[in-house]
Length: 150
Image 1 (cartoon, one colour):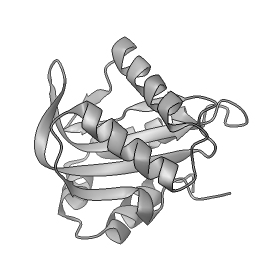
Image 2 (spheres, one colour):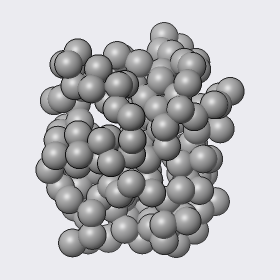
Image 3 (cartoon, one colour):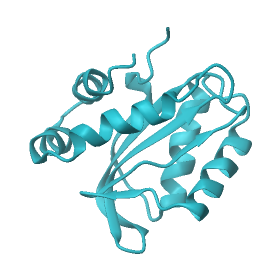
């Protein structure tokens, strides 16, 4: 099975003005890595999900996601922002874990990934390690180990 997250899906010190900017940037990364069938459809599905359910989870973290046929390979793209941006009504975020999951053959993989991330993100130490990581490789080691679905 292909890894869910790789270093080319990790963006550090991103300058963004809005969640739309971040969602598009991470979709471009996913598409560039060959993990999407249709980037614009995937982006539209992520925005549709954002309209129905807030994905800011607290702790300066957001988990935008979509399960759609526009996705070829189940993936997580990550961005750490230089400065916080407004995400939802009550959430400003600096860390974004964006999930892309295909409709077919993935079952509840997106829920497994979200649950695994949530179990770790509640800990200050884990978030601090992500915030302090100096490279995509460090992020990959932290996140890849924690989501356990590589």
